[in-house]
Amino acid sequence: MIYLADFSPIRPEFGLFAWTTLFFLLFWLLIGKFAFKPIAESLKKRESDIQDAIDSAKKAREEMSNMKAENERVLAEAREERAKILAEAKDTKNSIITEARDKAKEEASKVISNAMNDIENQKKLAMTEVKDQVSKLAIEIAEKIIRKDLAGNADQQSFAKKLVDELNLN
Image 1 (cartoon, rainbow, N blue to C red):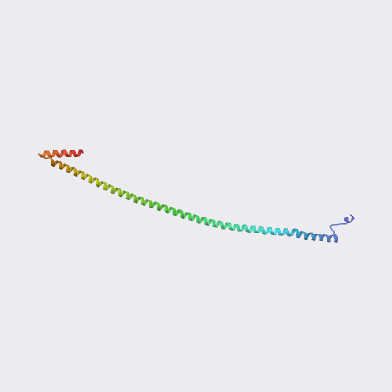
Image 2: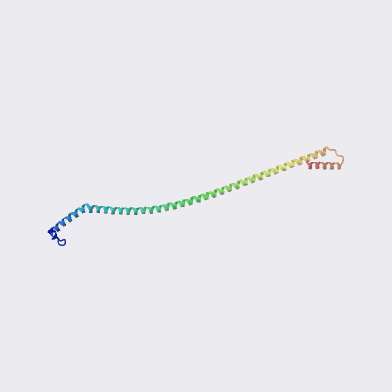
């Protein structure tokens, strides 16, 4: 123990210094080989993983901005296409309405023309029938007048008046 009492860490002896240095270097080599090297490799790996993640994020961000621009372009094209389709549908609707209106006018004019022709034909037919009846009545009156042998002018007038009254009643 006396040996320990003589020990002073502030003033080391050469032997203690040599052994301490030897153990420190041996410890440093062992730690460097088995601890620092794997730690440094894992730090490098982590650094490269982080850099890869940052690069991937940048690439994804660029792709997203490209996709967004593409989506906006496609959306604009779709809007233009929709506007064209709506305009075509409106034009088609207007042309169908105009065509239907024209056909209806044509049909109405044909119906009116046919009705006017029918009315005119019916009028002519009625006039013909009236003329036939008047001529038949005139013939009947003339026949009756001729058949009767009348003695005087007064008798003829009274007979003609009587026949006219009969015809007016029928």
